[in-house]
Image 1 (cartoon, one colour):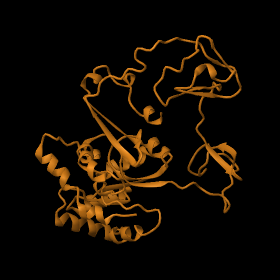
Image 2: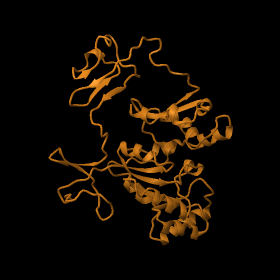
Image 3: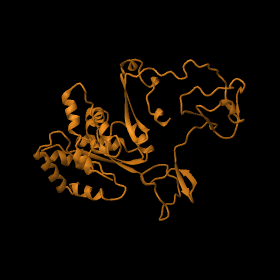
Image 4: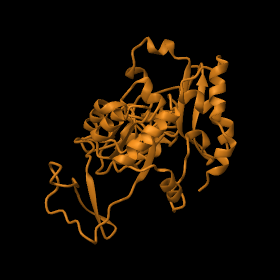
Length: 334
């Protein structure tokens, strides 16, 4: 159901969009051995409960607690606190898709978004946590000392900042720190994790100020002029990347020289050291992650989708296959 809420429906797009779609891509934990991208080409229409007899009934929750009813639960056997015509509902279930729950709530005020305080394993308070020197509305008299603890989250160190809608999805999966780059919905962001230029770096820092997550932006290191790199560092990047775009020996030497001169470090030795620590999952690039049973079988499709390549162009297929390196896959382990 959570995955379904993240999909665009007919009411979310213009009517003509439906006629142009010939391919559907769904990413989610739908397989026992991991999360995959499922691709359906020219899908047909799905009709729920086709040909089944339907009835409509008014249902009211008269109890003091919210009640959830599953898609295949015999509706007449629901709790007595639910008021409806049970004779009409005899032998019937909800007219919804499989594995769907209908929630009958009571609270007219809806859902509250807040931080919770836990004491002795129980919720002791609900409010807003944070630093009152930097945030408004923080709950007063909040105790932060040696006996308190913050819930740690996961670092995603290869993040494409395409749109702000990705942030809640990442946070809901336990990711609290995003490191990467980009400048919003454009082709450069799809291809690389770099925020190019001081202006884009400053705009990305400003645009994430009100999002309750940790961010680190990397700039673009593809420059033979050291001043262009210094501007990005002064704007606030945490590092520079030279991607697969004109990284000549001069570019690499310039980037490393600027980093060393401005107290940054070349990360190779430190990364190797970090990969030996517990809870660190190394990853050279996405095409070299050997962490599922079907890694090799799905690699070409994954690269074609991520880099917006066309299977009808032989050069595009060669580009995808070039990124799948057996030695790199063998070198990565947990």
